[in-house]
Image 1: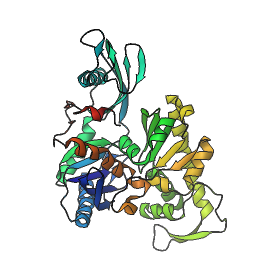
Image 2: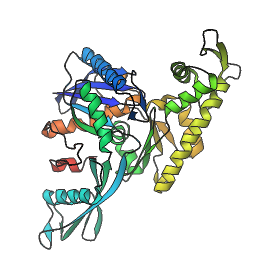
Image 3: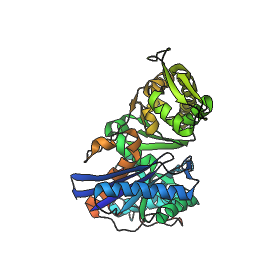
Image 4: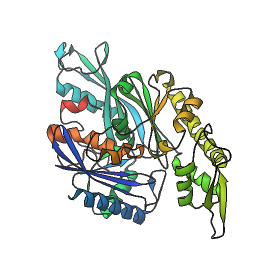
Length: 407
């Protein structure tokens, strides 16, 4: 069976084509990447260029894989992505009833009803259950009680964003089976179960935005999106050094650093300015002075987000940095020093064919989608019908009880 992943980011569009051989074998057959499109903070701002980038990325993956893409799942995100606490309470059929899988589904569905607004739901993730006065139960099936309460995180996104994503994908010639939140996908790809249990903040620094996802006690607690990403650093370099956007991106990747410990004050590199005759030498420290303030601004916003959630003191496993901007030299050290917390770079842990090609923080979301969706095929297949649609109505989110207890 073929699974195709499409990650439409601000800077690049990525495609993975994989085949599922059996329950233990995912064979990655093709990888594609394109940066022909124009987006602004995860919003589609140029339809034609985005369609072209999707076609280019998909074609590259298809040629490498030697098979046609099928069963397409796409990432979706943006600053309007919201994580809402849902609570559903049901009375059991009689006093001292044995709780069944159907009771759990009823409670989860009730949590969706209580939290629903105008925006479509793309994920409902259980946090814990309460049976009568017994709290913090992970799986209540088989317990005896009279009342069941379920607390969930309900992730929503505006229907207009979903419509725009679906439009460009369909115009490129493909059909989306379902969407996966970028917050959720990245967490599947780079976080360990131990980190989630101890308490961890995943910081996914993309081109246009930074996504924050916080776990404690193995439960997702908070998601947030900040309107700063790697593109802001690139723009600062472009303005500060009077370079084109492409040249600024290349300079950032090749020479950029957000710590100056190992920088040689005498080190210079040549750059070509905006005109043919404008070739200059730039010092590494000069570039650092442009990059560091923007990284510090991002850190400040992240600290504010974590403070408002009142979860910072529970991050016993520290923070994990991923996304393309996590490749910036010195970023781990800068976060550690500014936030006084352990940090590490999160690489996709998916162990599949061509794993070296995708072992990069920029592939965290794409690999995470593959990890997220694969068990659904292996345990029960996929109906081919979207579990969520743009009208805000949705089919049953969980077809078997196994889905409920797997984030």
